[in-house]
Image (cartoon, rainbow, N blue to C red; front, side, top):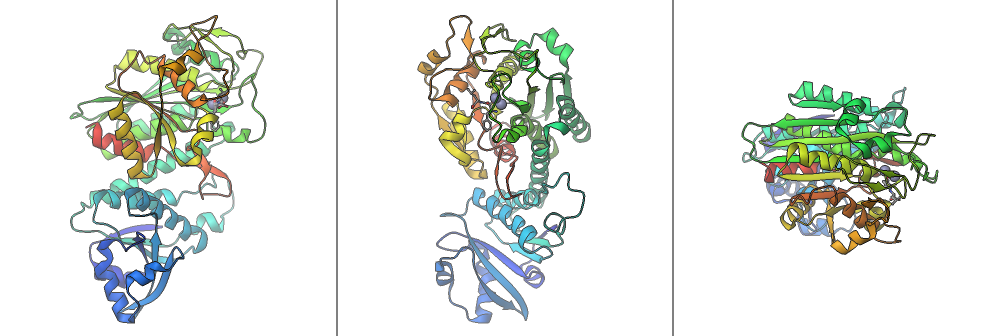
Length: 489
Ligand code: BES
Ligand code: ZN
Ligand code: ZN
């Protein structure tokens, strides 16, 4: 699929067969007025208001421009056009092209005169062409025949570089989706580390792999404890991109569990295969650093990804075990399936001690509890810092990667107190599981005043149209790239 930006309305009308118009319930995006007026007047069609009142979504009509037949599709996404709706529209259109009409030549989305919207469109079109058939051997009509061309009008007020930036964000999102869709027998701590090293070499940033021996020397006891049942040694992958003009240092910490069996507290086998996605937080953190480097954002950003399997073996940790941690705090492991918080405890404490970041954001497919609370519509956002929380929420709303703030009352910490150790890894109360998990993490942040935790368990992997079942989303890339470009330079 070719993506094309044209700065002439006429050239665009000449070229396209389908004109897809982002619209609110009231009207089409204003920048279409001139283009649509030409088509509509040619065919004496009813005014927009009537066309848009058609209840079907998208509604469409056939028009002509200088004898050229054009299908005009009005696409309504919610009440008003936002960056989020532009993105989801763009994503849906790309999927539609590939699944419904492979080979369509010329699909156009005109849009608001807004840099972010142009960027979202191109990011959406690029990500929307993602092919989940990683291991398919034969060409497949759905996945391979994308011969069309998507064109858009590039308003004079929008810098052409924005098109490239959008495509870059979409490409990084695709890479992250690949990492998350890759099954556990094709993925390991070493392979994720190798991905990071390759990316760093290619895009000019640094990658440090802390191997098992190094983790032992550092005293990352909680990460090593989770790794005990695994054949593959744990790693902590640290990537670092710094623009010379950056003013703040941002640490992104991502849960990297290659596969979560639950350990000795073994999971039910129903849907256990989804647990290949338990490294979506790590993939998002590593991908965001790659995106920052490729976009040359004026930021300093460090990704810290503790990576291991959570497997079952004679050596695996058992419920009731007491382990140590990088922070020197002891942890009673009530449930070996609450492993994400253990490896993040070490990574958070390491981030604080080693990097002293101005802001620290972790992403983790941490709890089923957050899926119960928010479903596949938003990630849980946990932070005591109002400014950080509201800026993340705003970036989420704008990019369509929504986060919803949850409470962090200290009373919840009481449920994590252990009789035998400094803290336990499970509250044992039948409620507030996502919050008590966040309180556990907080215990390892040295009371950092600018820390946010994103529980992305419902967002990293979900039924999202790329296949018949669950599929990676690349959640976090667009949200963080947007947040970083607004708040960290
Ligand atoms: N990886 C899971 C959480 C998860 C659940 C991610 C659903 C994606 C979808 C995590 O390690 C886990 O097992 N959490 C347990 C915690 C419990 C034992 C306290 C859970 O949520 O059930
Ligand atoms: Zn688990
Ligand atoms: Zn897990």
